[in-house]
Image 1 (cartoon, rainbow, N blue to C red):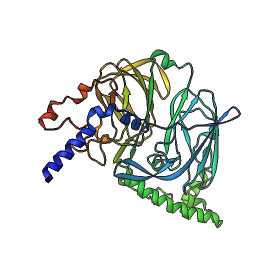
Image 2: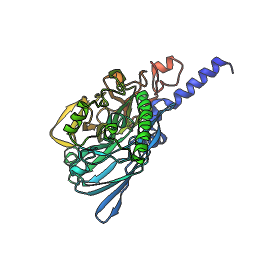
Image 3: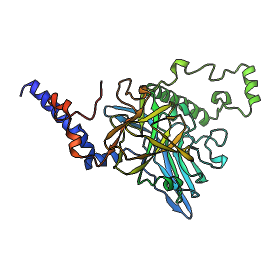
Image 4: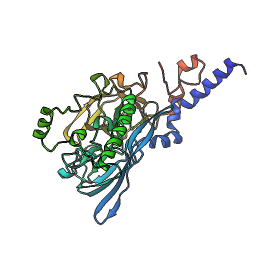
Amino acid sequence: MNRRDFLKTTTVLSAAVLMPHYLLTSEARAANNSRFPVALEPKMDGDVKEFHLFIDIYQHEVVPGFQFHTLAFNNRVPGPEFRVKQGDKVRVILKNKTELNHTIHWHGLHVPWRMDGVPYVTQMPVMPGQEFVYEFTAEPYGTHFYHCHWGTLLHMQSGMFGSFIIENDDDPILKKFPYEREYTLIYSAHDSNFVRNELNAMLERMKERMYLMKTGRFDKKRFAVFNTKEEFVQAVEAGYLPPYVISRRSQADLPQPNWFTVNGKSYPMTPNLYIRSGETIRVRLINAGQTEHYLHLHGHDFWLVADDGLPIPQPWQMNTMRLSPGKTADIIIEGKNRGIWTFHDHDTSRVTNNGLYPGGNLLALVYEDLPAEETELSMMAQKMGLPNLPHVALDE
């Protein structure tokens, strides 16, 4: 076989593996299930649901061929999903296995203020090797998330986020839109160069600080921590230079995301949303990143039914929605237009992998009852001498 025939044969085989009907195989659907957050199982301590989380440095694969070091909960990006009932008593035991400080902020939850996870405001940071116990009652109902609130600029885009779903047996959304399946999609943005450089620098700073603490040379100025604002002002007047004056970064060095992920993956490894004709599905959308997204679904309108976990009394029908940083939104999709449909960010700079389109937060709504002939017919592919158009394109 000569080189030309070999390339033609391998191209045909690759296309056969990736063509649309592959999406309907049991293998593809099983693989797709692993691309959604994994629920963290509690153990019962009386009437309290007790969960265990740890934080460690973890090498995460965004797409085949590209990995970067992250700070991850339980070695997952995103972290495991909490799924509890409204009113449940919750205990989360956090273990810090890294050489950095951390906390957990329960974004959107109505926890006691001492459980809110803001360092030096509600708690001391959880230092290397330490544990901290969060206890609260699960309120309110809806789609929420959690994230680290220490070094937030670095830690959140390093993977320290996860979904927190509070259910109610008397679900108002289920009453209005009887959905049969639901999915959680967590959006984020990552500057892999910033993460690498800042993570290395922060680890070096923490080594110095830990040494000073062990040797009894704790210095408020070196730690940039003061008891009062007046104490801080007096230190500046006496010649102290705050960190933002001798800045470790300039404006140009702030994060410029080059990877955009859904559930920790970029296209073509993003999850698909499976649906059937006549079926209704619920999709929980969480923006745990620093950029806005303008999410557009082809071939359908969807219903916006919850905003920040709160059910909307009069749902809105739309096909493009704005998802700002820190926002959660629940949408309902009705299976009324059979096919394979794109669901993507209409700011196409977020649909790139390291600047190359297509990539990023591009995924598909896939009808499971699509007839086989519709997945195989392709006049364009036949003209090209291929059995079908490939489903995965990495460069236009």
